[in-house]
Image (cartoon, rainbow, N blue to C red; front, side):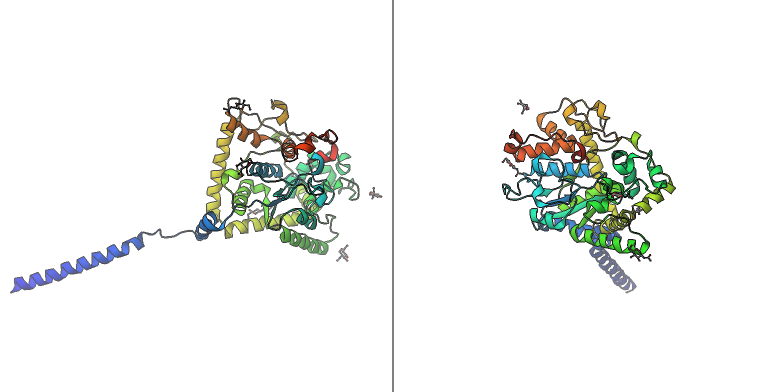
Length: 417
Ligand SMILES: *[C@@H]1O[C@H](CO)[C@@H](O)[C@H](O)[C@H]1NC(C)=O
Ligand SMILES: *[C@@H]1O[C@H](CO)[C@@H](O)[C@H](O)[C@H]1NC(C)=O
Ligand SMILES: *[C@@H]1O[C@H](CO)[C@@H](O)[C@H](O)[C@H]1NC(C)=O
Ligand SMILES: *[C@@H]1O[C@H](CO)[C@@H](O)[C@H](O)[C@H]1NC(C)=O
Ligand SMILES: *[C@@H]1O[C@H](CO)[C@@H](O)[C@H](O)[C@H]1NC(C)=O
């Protein structure tokens, strides 16, 4: 009798364990899920899936406001290469000029093919101009994507001073320090070309760059500048975070990382760079008070955009991927594996334009490249002026060949960038 009772109890105990183990097995898949997933990452994954499969179409109508001394030449090269390989049409300056008649306000008829109506559709507008929303809209399709790039006004002014040393405001002084300590005495806002010396970002966006007289005025004017920029430009990149900017651009345009992989173009050699003291930096911020305000604003919105879309982890992963791609391209294309001083550039047609006291570096291609690789590598290192001329010649072969409009010998202001 006891033995029977013992077996019954044993039976229930075994049954209990069987049921328990089944329950655990059923619940296991759920429990195997990673304990935590980064909130931002999740958001990105959802967005990215949609982006890359159904909803995201690579953008082909693009307006890039090219600003000065902000690494914008590298972005120009990216746009040129993408446009060239996708048969896009560029809104190029009239008569093979390299700029859209900067510093005059942009006008639709500055673009080759507008007056003659010989171009049906423009895809990309990206050469130097002083922005005018109304006139740009006359040239570019309604769905064009507008973006630009800003740089910290402190580093930017050091760069501008070296490059534009010949403008009236800078000509008479020995150093940027001297210029600022004198309170910009040699600066007269109404003298041509002095716009390079004060609030040039505000100027390039087509806005009033004169210095506000007091803080009330600065608050009002900078709010106006920021509002005007936000109305026209859904994306503002930041030069200090260049690779992060390229990743953001890639997502905004729905392009690939390969599309935004590039070498630094029109970049100064380290030797001609000079750090500024904290005191001078403060003076630069005060001198360029409008630019300093808008830089701070758009630096903050840049990071907010990253946090609300990609998330920093995913951003960092893509930045690393981009850098690896760049290293591969450098190894594949470049004889020295990197930039060299202009005197060492062997192919004189690939020598970057030199201006002011800046030493602008260039590149040498490896000799043993096959044709396809050579073409890719060549495009990566072609300086802005040469590339602009080449695209013009491709788009307007008859105009480029016409004896009455030879490629203008580019001197003076037209070549400044
Ligand atoms: C660009 O045009 C060329 C010549 O017409 C053509 O062979 C090529 O497939 C086009 N490429 C694209 C991406 O449309
Ligand atoms: C600034 O330049 C304008 C135009 O050249 C001139 O009329 C004016 O007198 C100058 N102002 C000063 C303070 O030098
Ligand atoms: C600030 O400058 C503006 C424009 O010059 C002027 O109208 C205003 O009265 C000034 N405000 C103060 C508090 O000085
Ligand atoms: C730009 O934003 C980053 C990230 O928030 C911050 O670390 C950096 O100090 C900002 N730069 C300036 C000049 O405000
Ligand atoms: C490479 O380019 C050269 C000159 O452009 C041409 O003569 C040659 O046939 C090309 N080779 C190949 C394999 O396409």
